[in-house]
Length: 167
Image 1 (cartoon, rainbow, N blue to C red):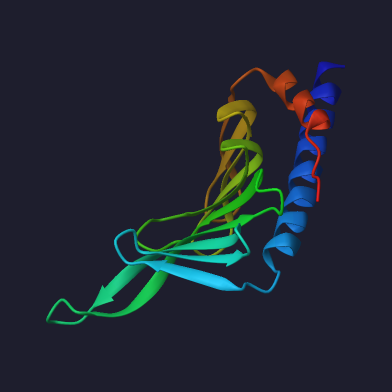
Image 2 (tube, helix red, strand yellow):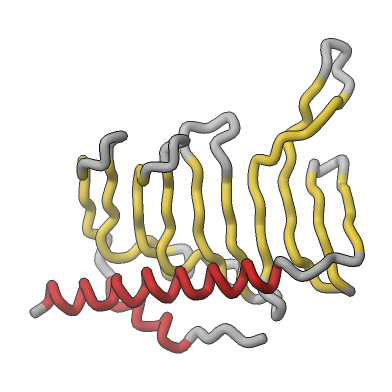
């Protein structure tokens, strides 16, 4: 019986995360009316009015004279219209994995995925208020499970039922 409860909570958290991600992407896809390039932080932020739509963290590409000739994107953050939710994506630039997860009011919640640079899942875990809960699973490059860790506190995922997406 306990296993089915855990499965049910993780299934709900997985679906909840997917639904929230889609809504954030829709909100962040509005046509921006302003953008700010912050060369000191290497970021580009798009706005509609005073509302953030998306932010890109950039890595400068330098020529042999250390002059910036272009940028590569290292991460992106998409924002919900109420600014409470963020979809965070870190790309495989200079690291051996990518990341995708949702933040609510600054805290990671729901399903977090770490992927190999070829897109295959490297690790999946569930978080609530930045705390890893339930079972974390690691995979090799072929998709075989290499490690499972029970982090406990799976019941914290019940709190996702109370977190609603408002537009």
